[in-house]
Length: 300
Image 1 (cartoon, helix red, strand yellow):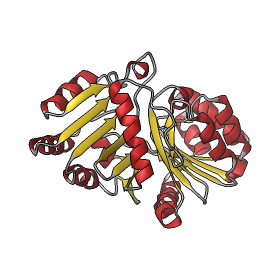
Image 2: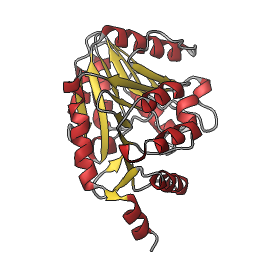
Image 3: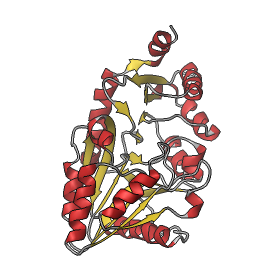
């Protein structure tokens, strides 16, 4: 597996993945609006290669209709996500691609900001069981059918991903987390609280009032929390590291994300593959501001 971090890698690895497609390309992404990505998709279609894309029909920024029309102009087949992921406050929030031999799973949307401003992670690999499972999920969502539980040893897939994430967090003696949200899942919050000083967490400066309250609660239990200043980078990543394995994916720490949305994440166990996550976490930890200090400065 090859691990990438953003904004360090830029969009070239994603563009190269798309360009390398020889037979078929399948993309499920919450947001797609980067013009270079659009051009790369159009070029694949022009080579008479089948391209299927699933997007969310009502993303938070209201760009769903515009993105849908732009994607269809590439010549790709484009479907809105299944109806069960299109209700009120429920989304197809996944971020993965599969071609005839490889897959790419990450935390980033296919947008300009993801490659230039955000902290993101993604992996590229060719492990057959993971590839097969992703294709099963994609084909099921394309047809509007339930995806089932096809061989997900290294994948964590929502809906109903909460128990596997709980277990991953519970077994961890030390935890290093980068996340866009703390969320509102009571069980998850209690597990995080129980880690005390053994948990280090980095959040974006845009956290909600509710997440600020949750951060205060966690800090009262000795959890170490820092805030990434927006002028350095936006903390959009969803990364968990416990020194023995790492997890990245589209899942935020919220009940909707874990229990209702379509989300896809992957567990990475090989030490050499995980190295980049700790390197970037340590870099971000040094650049981030202690939560208590950030809170004081922002209350003035």
